[in-house]
Amino acid sequence: MKKLFFAAWLVLGITVFAYAESSSEAAKQVAAELQDSGSIAAADVSTVKSSVKTLIDNGATKDEAKNVVSRAAHQAKQEGLRGKELAAKVHEAVKARKAELKEAKNKVKEEAKKKTKEAKQKAEKEKKKLKEKADKAKKSMNKKQGQ
Image (tube, rainbow, N blue to C red; front, side):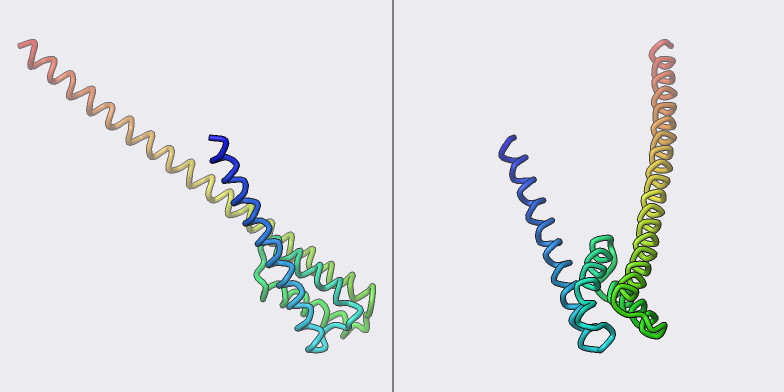
């Protein structure tokens, strides 16, 4: 039993590490793409990387994270923002998208709970019907045996 428990934790740990590494790699790649396209300056790369990683870790796809950060950076540039102001604008957009993702996850969880509850209620009704049929059949058999 201990070996099974240890193996499960080992697999989980490897999976989490692989996922974390892939989000970091995706963040680096997206930051490099945005820098190459001129959307961000070299000084903003580290901020963008952390923002992209945050979005990916919270359930966004790589492309979705890239779009959110790219739009925020582009809008900040149009407003004449650079450096810390640009980073703040990107952070604000990431925070908003992160909240949207969290809300969507909560909605899915609530729907799943609702469906589970409905399924349990349906199962209870079926169980009750079957019990009633069994009791009815039992009474019928008792009547026949009593005659």
